Amino acid sequence: MLCETDGSSSEDDEEIKIAVVRYFATQSRYLSARVNSPKTKELAYLIFQSDELTFKRNARMTRQAFFAVVDKIGSHIVFRNKSHHEQAPVPDQLMVALSRFGFDGSASSLWTAGSRLGIGEGTVSLYTERVMYALLSLEKTVVTWPNTSERATIKARIEKNQGFPHCLGYVDGSLIGLQEAPSMCGEDYYTRKGSFAINAMIVCDDLKRIRHVFAGFPGCSHDHRVFMYSKLALNPFKYFSGHEYLLADSAYPVSDIIVPTFKKPLANSHENTAFNTAHSQARVIVEQTIGMLKGRFQSSKALRLRIKNKKDHEFAVYWIRTCCMLHNMLLDDEYDEEWTVEDDGDDGPIPNPNQQAVATERGQPNEKE
Image 1 (tube, one colour):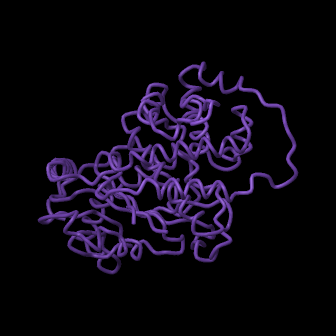
Image 2 (tube, rainbow, N blue to C red; image 1 turned 90 degrees about the vertical axis):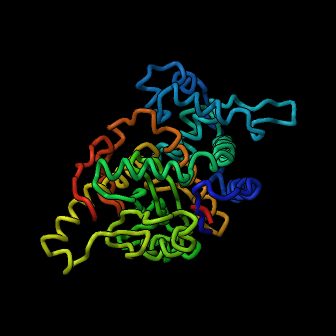
């Protein structure tokens, strides 16, 4: 399944809910005979009562931002029961989901999350499912393509600060790693770096807001191919007007809406080298955006999800979209530099998101489907 989102088209919430529920329903919770282990909610209590630094390390956001997210999703019907048995409070369920989104490796496993927060693995799955469904119901208002007025503002900022007139932002591809090889067409997910992944095309503006996501192609797919199947390429007049375009690296095709860097041998001329330098200094913003996404929500470096069929693949894409949504919701929440770590995936080292792109005075020169 290919999923592309920018808030420009309506979502079938029921389709999302069915995909999420079916994923958890088909997963094997236990690899061996179940052994009941003692559980305590003391650690979960301590997290909520902890100092700001400890809370932020666990929730991947400040306490104020955390409860702002709770306010946005707390009234969703998914958190209501028809039975007499009340659900856990929404903050508890959100903390459980964030413990999976925010960490990679074994730290994001069902067992680890359950052990840390004093609940069973099945409950971890259920809470994560509910939070994803509630968040994705807000997707149309969180990941949005800029309207005419917003595009004019973005273009003016980029021209003033980076010297590229008519530029709407930046596009780049990122490999969202998978912890294990999918049993369904596993070879298609195999990347040139020797790992398994899903390709995600990210478009962002100069303020690091994700404006468009196109996720779902397997890791073997080239960024050029992914872009050509995106809505931006197939229906450009819906997204661009006049001379508007995006900056991209040399993997992308030259077109009316894409301005990539020069490839060799053209890149060897003095003029084109200067252009590529200015271009790269501007485009570092999308690399920083992806770095922030993978730094705050490190599960996106290596998803601990089993992909055995189409529904499992769909769920992985919904996971990616949920993390992109949370990135946008937390743009005003201070990013912690300790989250920025070396990325062994296709993207290389994650750039420091707090580094400012070098401004240039050169005049003319990061979806759901």
